[in-house]
Length: 418
Image (cartoon, rainbow, N blue to C red; front, side, top):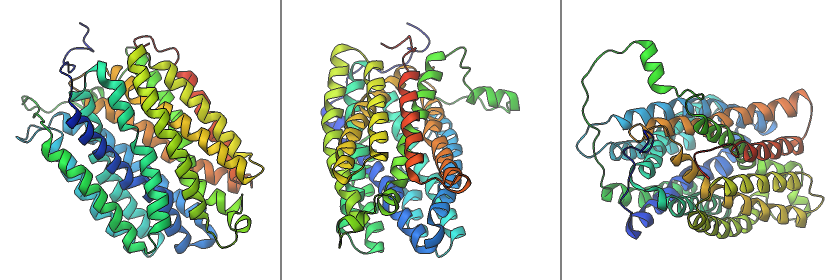
């Protein structure tokens, strides 16, 4: 047994755990995907219609900075939490409460500064919640079931986008009711799983005052010692960058590039986004479940991750260059297939290359930087392309396609996982 394998879970998890964990993950995605895909773009447009892309990008940038720091701290803190209820449970509850409080602040924001502050509060609370939630998989799911559980967890993204655009963006009319809806979903899905979770506290350690160098070493992972971890991290960063662009700017793409309201008089761009998301979600779910089960059956991860990323690349490029609405619809279906294949297996791959089972929360915090950093890069990239070069959003989506393709190729040299 290698050092990396020591402490790994071996007991299979039951259907009740998988079902509850899946619902909690879906609720977590519903708590933030509608926010970033629908509610924040609408809020930015209401506060500053003439500079909505710039404002949204600034809000996303500073929120992402907080998200990156929060992920690192949250994972390390939960790894060392010795409270009686466990090391993940407390932070699921605390992070959830912070997320709910942030909704109220975002809703009440009346200017750009208040909106930025509220989003930073949201990122702090949500990332403490999400870091603990992801660490549960490394704590309790054995390698033989990681493909299945990863596939189930990957349903969070398509269902989150489906609820966000179809229900929050389409069926619910009032702004306040939209925030109330995602808050209720978060509580209803997260709380039962958290209360039922059989968590264990971290073993107490002797208190000391480590040097600054020692603290840095505790957080850092040398890519030369753990090259597979580094490759998985880099590949994920590239693909997530593509996701962040699509998630954050598709509404504006429909408004300003495809001119959805002109194509379909009487209908809004939010309704067009809801339709795209619905067809993509069906494709996503089908490919996700199939990909996770087949991945476990054949014992391969890299092939599915790389294939999903490459499909995403072609789909985003096709969407950016779509000459008609029907072409855009077909491209979005392909986007859903690629996202399903990628997300179904990516987390299984990541949890199998973690350097240490005891530090899973901290290591996943580093992995989650691959979620946070794209949220910094994407708005900077959007501002750079649209202001410095005067390009429209097509150029931004083409760059996103290229990063997804690169991310798929990066994972192929990983050796410890097939």
